[in-house]
Image (cartoon, rainbow, N blue to C red; front, side, top):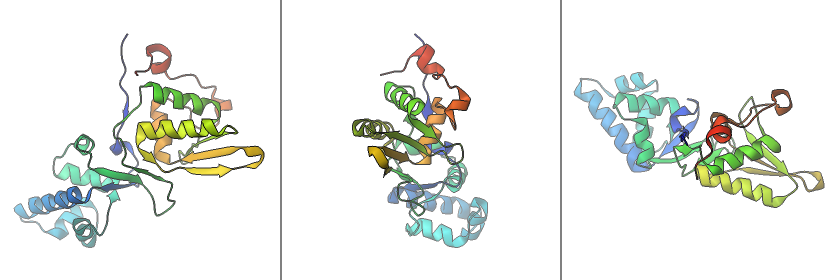
Length: 218
């Protein structure tokens, strides 16, 4: 049986998403970028221009006053230093990802990048998504609703197993109905894994081919 390996990486997130690096790594990253720029006669100002930020931002990154940066800026820093994006995942340099200043629950702490998608845990999550789940086509929030608290606990457990410490929001409705809402990163990950986006009644979705024809890995 042929095995399909699907992964979701940090650099597949939109450029406007915040990513938080470990302190020592972020400081060394900016130090290396400044040293490289100065070696060719540049300055902090010229480096800031190349990265598309202001000078103050460079200083804030270097001092760790800014404990994170936008995905689009981190990609530019990695490109400037010829650093592989996947190295950040292999060395576990990513502390968290999301936009905590907007809503605390839009975060994943200690994310397990890259998220492995072609396994039984993700297959089960997609099963939930295709039954009583929903991925918003506007902002990719993934939500799941049930009157069974054990099902709510199960899907939270599965997503944490795959992705890390995911900050989710619990909403209790009438008739003991419970909704759990996950950050947009989860919805985008599930989209790549083949989960339906938007109104399922209009889409008539089917199982992703890696589940239907290949079979998920353990």
